[in-house]
Length: 344
Image 1: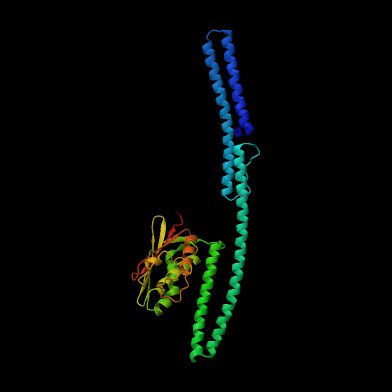
Image 2: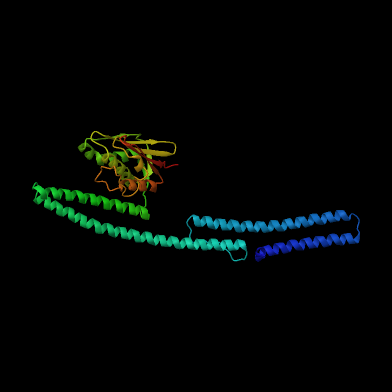
């Protein structure tokens, strides 16, 4: 039997068997002598035998408990980050076979972690190279177009085409930047530098960025929320996420529209909402708007590239938050971000 492969179990069973044989022979010997109160002596032998067996079992299980506690502490230490831990399995039996398999699993996980670390390093370097290679020609093209515009200012078709080219280059630069940001988030190469930030200050920063555009397009941006609300987040990335939602609202709101930036603090979360009274989203599109490059067949936004909302979602989820959308055609759209309060 496999159970007897473990020498400790074998020794336990041998000790119990020896104990039973000894006290059985002792009882038989007393019976053979015909001593008075033989029944009482047999009862004493039985009790002594039971006590001995219980003592043997107690010692064995106490030792097994120590072994299991040691294994649990090693596993806990591994989960805490120590990758060099190993459970001792220098004996035979099913329990030590289990320990051996756990050690093998740890070795496999460590190998995968090293591979993932190498892949992330490769991605980080590749993204950096791509970023550099793309930014340089785009910057050069913007300079060239600026020079052309200064030479032919107001001169018919050339002037008009140079303006259109500049617009498309700006759009391409935005596409490249968003692609790089999403790729970095996917690769896990970005470390969020969280600090306690005032939500009002974040909202005012976003509003200031879009205020000129809103005034040019005859739209209004309104803030609503407590000036005391604080949030543990990476300020730069959180501004990026909210800015994409505000830009989306401006893109889909007509002249005279209003974009409301609201925030509220609950028992365990801070809720940020970006609402507009624009064209809204059709029901068949609601489940797809966070997909990259998704464009609705009803969309009239010819400038959108379908990366702003996915980027916002990735940033919010990197902060362990959630983002939801509620909309209906012609009834405006509301994006709601839920983030845990820092001390919860």
